[in-house]
Length: 96
Image 1 (cartoon, rainbow, N blue to C red):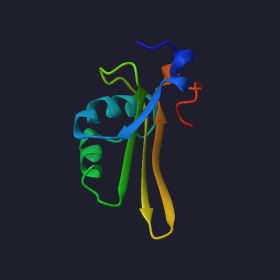
Image 2 (image 1 turned 135 degrees about the vertical axis):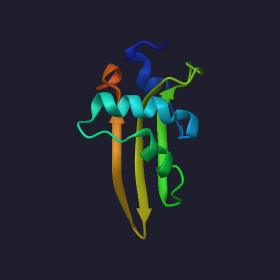
Image 3 (image 1 turned 90 degrees about the horizontal axis):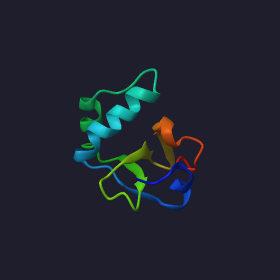
């Protein structure tokens, strides 16, 4: 496990996959007053204009997810739907 101060230098951004849905839902439920359900995240993974990314530690290949972002690219604009960082690593640069 990476210590909190190391996150900024050890972050990896990758596309969200179906296997990430449980972890992403748990982060969303813990941090958002109006969290999405697992089903909503699964549906989002099927939408072609939707971009879903997760942030995690490069050295923790077990897949600990620190945060995620979901946005749509429509014409020449970006519509941000969700950006959430786990409370344990907030203010560590993960959201940047």
